[in-house]
Image 1 (cartoon, rainbow, N blue to C red):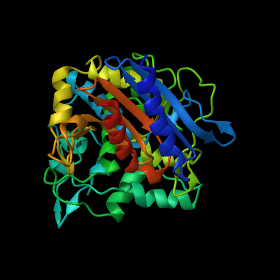
Image 2 (tube, rainbow, N blue to C red; image 1 turned 90 degrees about the vertical axis):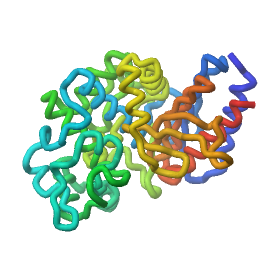
Image 3 (cartoon, rainbow, N blue to C red; image 1 turned 60 degrees about the horizontal axis):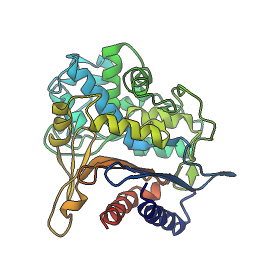
Length: 353
């Protein structure tokens, strides 16, 4: 065990947490066989309970990689094709007028790969509905009703396949597609295809399922605009397959290691998930639930090249090929939606020293 490297990483993490009054609890796991490093640490508290590395964390949009993996499993088993129209898999109530843009209905033109790589052009109902949920804890709406609410109250961003616009609606439709193919709820599919095979005993979907084995520690609190959202049950309906995963850090490591080693999906499919992508930000492409940091001289040096996913509460889960290192963490507050990625880059820089 590289104790000096471990201490340096832990010091950076602790300093990051201490300088923000909004961070109540935060978690970090860094694992590398190449660097002889395995650090799983936590700072802060969940209420009166001191933060513990084995606590379960809600991971927000990190869950999108689980959803794209399920869709890729269905693809490899011949149960769907990425080029299929979504109209083959969804009911008429959802499809009717789903994508009306400038007087033309593009619904039939939406392919599964458009949902995966965020180029469907569909609206994003998550944030406007979240405002309703935060304003009224008893507000009720199902995932299907939320999609219908979105098409009635929001406008699409453009024709399918033309432009990347990040929206949870895409991933909620993917979840429903998986359910319709398998005839099971999405959390049941996750358990059968991912959690059980990988022995992820402390993983589940928030407010939708239970872990295989109960975790003895309280689930870490996560906050949005100062409100702890853990027990807002309708939040799970508008989050769903766009990011409903809750897990401890070690379980998330098992998942990423299985993806990297191609134990769940083939190397060919993984390369497609990474490389069939479009630019989401300067130096960052978005594939099938995967954020890929690319070399841009000066702005993004080659040493930062890695891939994974991020979430709105300051969560991240990445693999760095050159360092053969897994970087997984969560700051559990929306104020760290972008700061978490910057922190991870700072961490990578330190690991190279």
